[in-house]
Length: 322
Image 1: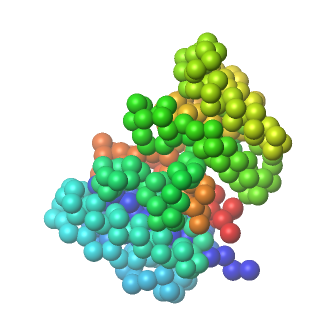
Image 2: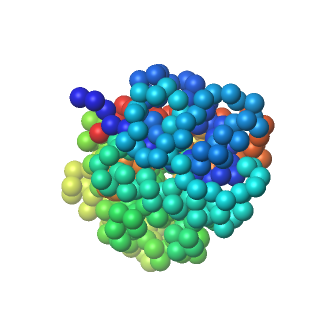
């Protein structure tokens, strides 16, 4: 059966995204190239690659129905207002990003592509109502209970924050037994259906030393009851563990470490795996992945950007996308 097309959303125009897209393009097979369509500005990518002295051919197309066998970087063109290709104004960038994400969403909802890979985006450019791409796409998919899952995936270990892009003061009131149960069941279900394995899941507490088991702590009121309930569903799950020691050695015994907030799990994970990871959103109506890094504005135009994470995204979608 012929595999479906793969969308790469070019993301933030003020970034290393054009550079790493081309670096990945040069590394993948011709058959995989045929399936890839970039949603971005044709003129922006053309000018950025020219500034970087890259001469590879790109082609502007109007929609996803264009002949896939063209061995060129196919750009579904999105209008973008700018003068300097490495300094696009904030208002124009924001409009461009939302338009790009909306187009990718509509293509996927209509089952015309296999998956979306979105390159890095400065979250400040999104509508303030949505704190990240994860939350924005959840809204587009009409997921209103905050049960979408941010899974930072590596073959050796994945991590998941129960709350995503929220301020620390918002974390405790956001934690609910039902939310932990929904998200962890989605992780378990995804591992079973996609990777064909029953994952071993470790759960972290919220407070230092798990609040020393104080009866009114989040560990006692929320996290332990959620774990107890999940054990009734026969998940291989244990915890809560104090988060200050898990990433020394204990994490090696698990497939997934679930934390209560973003940096609790992402900071130690990135110190271990660097760029060798991808961000997968579970619970959407389609497969969405993204590189596990930011826009790297300090590297723009220097030809030093690391394309490992985007290449991992492409290979993962090729292997596991449906």
